[in-house]
View 1 (tube, rainbow, N blue to C red):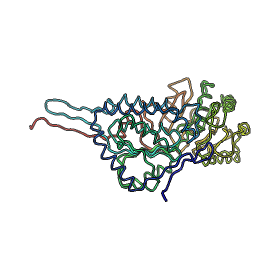
View 2 (cartoon, helix red, strand yellow):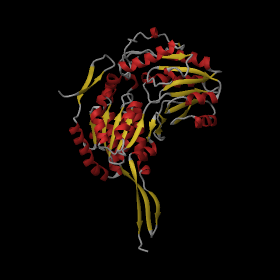
View 3 (cartoon, rainbow, N blue to C red):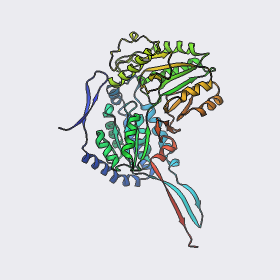
View 4 (cartoon, rainbow, N blue to C red):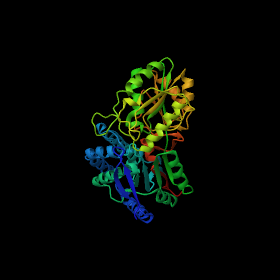
Length: 462
């Protein structure tokens, strides 16, 4: 019997999509086609590759209505938010716009005696393993620069978002990217690990759990394959004594609750200067009570189901453990009648929390946030750094110099001042500690999918 992978819709629990997995032999053939096609793709001019990729993004935009509906069925995001097209277009446009500069040779000398330069050369076949929470945005972070730089790309998407890879392939092929240059594949873990261990790829980008990242590293051990790993997060917000309170509440609570809290850089813990603590908490509770949990196809719904029942169980367990250890819940779940004990989960704010609690240390990836009072910047830095993760930190103050001073002490990949939960394509998206290694977007995103090649050309014999 052919093995299949299923997408169970969080909307109603039915099997929404099902696809057969590739055998190891079929997967090896797909990678061989990608490798054979890559040279011809790289031989095109940079302008030609950019034009085809941009045409592919335009084709994806033309599918917007279908894509938004499919996203709601696959992972529960309310249709009122219109999918991920704003971010997709912003990132694709920016990365295309900087390609010529990012990939330009570094000329050390161009004289009558020597020509010395460093060029950027595509690595070959890039393997992208994408997650379900922002399935288009996380994919294109690597796909766009990889294709533009002249690589072929093999995409393996999450089982929760099986149709996303198919839509990306459909769009890019319509734009003129050859079928073998961009391939969407459905594979199980064993086949994936076998390919990685056999040096099938020249660069691997994985976005997912810490455990998943460790598995990828073990599979790649000894192959010297380049890895980009964006793993867990427990991103903090710090509200200083001079912060714009209303703006901080609005942004941080949106950062904690949007997409049912299932954001790589979502806010999972908040520290507030003691002078603003009670006012912040009061406003935060009022903000959360305006959310509407329900069917993602209802235009009034602002909070859909979590992507999978088992993800909701993790969050419920963290909340229950925290309450048992003395945390105080401020949101009555009864206010959210759609909470069914399954994928539909009421949002929650917890106070009287501490760093002994799982909800303040483990990744939650759901609509819950703990809020603590701190006495000053030093205490805030200490608790922000008291985490195995380091993706982003959001600082709220009117003083940019103060934000920079505090930010310099925080162990994280990105420091935000007066905003959160956003990827600026001009800046490197990166993390530290258990959040992983490597970086995407910005000029450095091109460096990840290319290798330097030096030319030392002596024009004279003496």
